Image 1 (cartoon, rainbow, N blue to C red):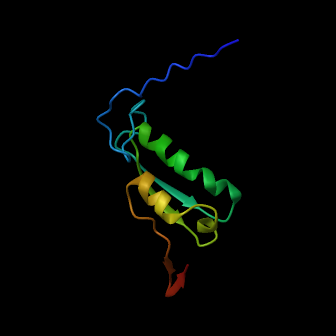
Image 2: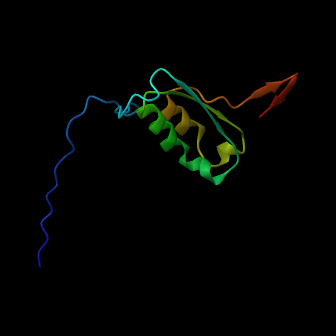
Length: 96
């Protein structure tokens, strides 16, 4: 039995590495605030951010220090195309 591999390069794309191909417009013009806390599920958030963006949303990520133990801040900034907000101030107190 012989196997023949047919290796073809992917088709060319105008998208840059941070762009997403729109699959719908359900969230077009909407802003999504995504809060990431200390859960192992945080490692899946870059995929979720890109899914929101595929539907046309702008995503702003808020993350606690505990949340950033499971996913890199740089990865979240890359996929959301926005800075990650990781400092919170409430009535004179600062939370990290």
